Length: 113
Length: 115
Image (cartoon, rainbow over the protein chains, first blue to last red):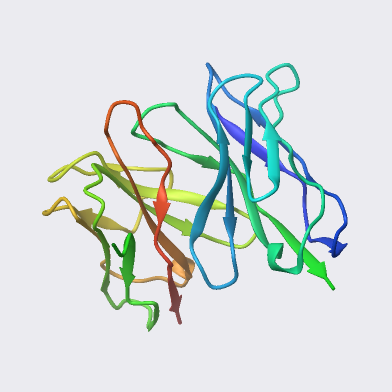
């Protein structure tokens, strides 16, 4: 079946450091890939997505590239801010309206000033 | 435009009690979902609906029932709560329009504790 594996956290960084959160997946067919972010006390928000191989999703300085050859969708940001502290979830789904998303376990990011 | 709202935000139940969680969306979305979030396990799909009057089981449906009598509402019921149902519950919705976008929009969550 489909599955998503994320690096365990927490990831602790100083402000302006470079961020990478690893995500790999197992899926049949050609899934869409997503990164969701959950700020403290809130629900999940879509951060970025990619719907086919070699697509790069980007938003708010975050980027992730859909790599079919390595079945990966790693999240990166060049310079993190304290306000980026949150839990980040990698997920896969289909490129259709109805989605049974499969989530990774989440990675907590803590950014200190 | 409130998006996806959930009530209540917090609830404490005793084992064996029942309750209903309400989810409402104002985006005219076709599809709605209920998830639970537990530490170290990400989000798991409980039940979902592909349209008004339809429901289906997700990954972890046991102990829960759902109804979708109106397009904008999706109710999650616990008939006899158990401590294993202590969790944070999230509702989400997504549209069914051809061409998308297809991402799911999440509510703020309900934190349920069963003692």
